[in-house]
Length: 130
Length: 130
DNA sequence: CTTGACCTTCCAGTTGCTGGAAACTTTATG
DNA sequence: CATAAAGTTTCCAGCAACTGGAAGGTCAAG
Image 1 (tube, chains in turn green, brown, orange, purple):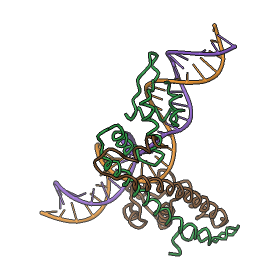
Image 2 (cartoon, rainbow over the protein chains, first blue to last red):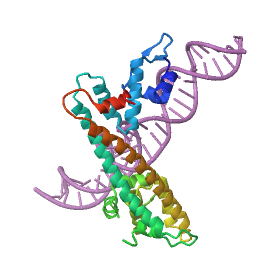
Image 3 (cartoon, protein in one colour):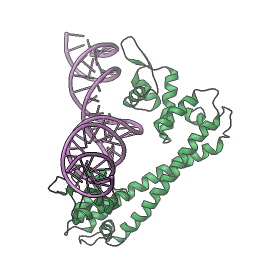
Image 4 (spheres, rainbow over the protein chains, first blue to last red):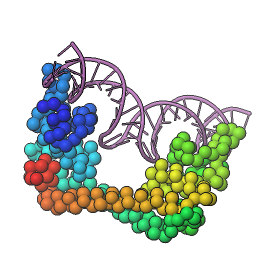
């Protein structure tokens, strides 16, 4: 299977699939003409990557998850640990963003937003208030 | 004022301050020996950047905000608009992360996480369920 | 037979820094 | 006063995860 069909089947751009090959994630065979040739197994791995990345796992995590995916003797605990760590990361990011959100919301609310120069947002950024 | 004191005063690493000069954000004078020389005004701008970046504004936004900060004839509406757009961006990111959080939380919850290979997380990533 | 769609490789750019090397100046110490 | 340590300079490379584009080979259709 050529790369563009593989791309369509897994939902990843061809560029990304080539990139995944570069970094050793999915290494397809080659046809006689030098074109990449994706097997069903390759396709499964690409779909796996598409989903893992979609859930926000890092490439390194994906590499680990992919090896666990292929390991019939894996311990689910190993998978769970990766997911749990990622979840905690997301929890932290949400907390950070929420804090920014609160501050920004207040500032935007306080600013009248007209053609005059007085601006609580600028004042806050300048530190003339705090 | 040397760069390291400026760094301490504004809470940014010296490396970052040099980088901000590279990209034309804060251009200090030079001392006779070639060392950078930060004025009070430079310092204000650096502090402004430290805070703006801390609120998650992009460098490009910071550049705009900085020019508005220095513009005594600015319209607060312009500032507000930048902040509002950034806030909406944050809102979107939070929504995205929350959706990931929900999915991951469920998966982590469903996985028993022992030494057996059955794993709802892997199954989800592989797409064998959906 | 040519046109256009595909495919290949390789190199550069994105964001916002951060680390490190090599060389200079200044400051502190013995 | 010599020297060592600390601070400074410039420049180059690298991070994550792609994405865009150039230059060229291949293939299917008309």
